[in-house]
Length: 456
Image 1: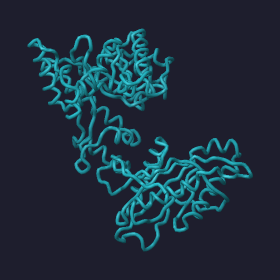
Image 2 (image 1 turned 180 degrees about the horizontal axis):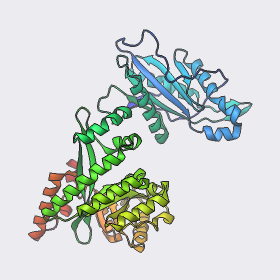
Image 3 (image 1 turned 45 degrees about the horizontal axis):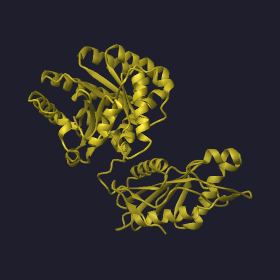
Image 4 (image 1 turned 120 degrees about the horizontal axis):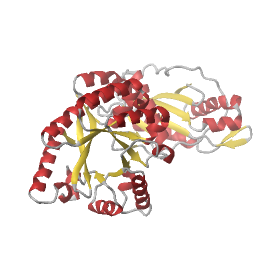
């Protein structure tokens, strides 16, 4: 039986990849949470395990089986799980979702049991004489028995299931890890306080114009310095802010801070355009757009907004209208992560954007792939035909920079130039570049060895 492994993020990921399932029905009473066994909680060395098992291809199976038979499918799976592990507690939480609860002496032991279940479900399931393959997703949370917060355990299992859907394998989250930021419910509660108490801060990553060899602008990147958890990166809290309805307040805070920083830089002699990211949810929010426009108009600062094309696709009419409103008051618009999603020329030609940013997934392997250079070159030509400048993200090597220069890329951003820097460090970076340019030396951005920023 495959063993469980701990990855760099602290998650224990069993060697499970989601697959198939088993026999006959036995109804289970629905419940919000499984009832934990008496005598287990509080015992030393005991871990509580909660697993959410989801039939990922339920919609497809329902079309083949018909609704009545498909609705009984989750009970078939539940019955087989009970037959395989009689000591677990199980409830059906929906037509395609099962909650499995049990105790073990370690998270690894719990992962191994889930892996044993997964292995048993690899063969197609016989339904009325015909074989059907079930694609199962497993999201698992493990908590020491003295941690009685069942809401937090459920939140972790839901987060693990969400990750499992995307990764195609089971994911386990260990709640004993204080540095993990998967506890969405707690983060939702803490976000308003964090904004009010100044726990948020910005870092800036410069963008360099290739032909002019000078810093043309910079991207503002928000961070959260939590008093207990330490540094929390945007990937862990932006989606939480969206779900909690706090993304508007967070973005307005960011906008005001970027304006203040842009004015300080201009006073230093570096009148750069500073870009900040705008969530797709806000592009359809007329109240946010009006407030942001009022703030920008009264500030006089040189600002840019980075938006993803997928954000526009959510509600294209509102998004394009509001983006035009931003463009009309002088905000520069950049299309971020181009190529990472389902890029649509139908929307691209309608956007009032002046810059297109090629996603780093194409740039990181630019000199080692046969196809990526073709994609990057064609994207650069397309953007230029639409009268947009092109920025390549994720530039980490001089060879990638040289190739992008030959292809006609306008600007580059990445660790070869600089990692994201705190505001004071960014000011020093600009001063150093200016001093080198004044003395006739090459800009510092281009003479540092590629290992420099990786070490930093």
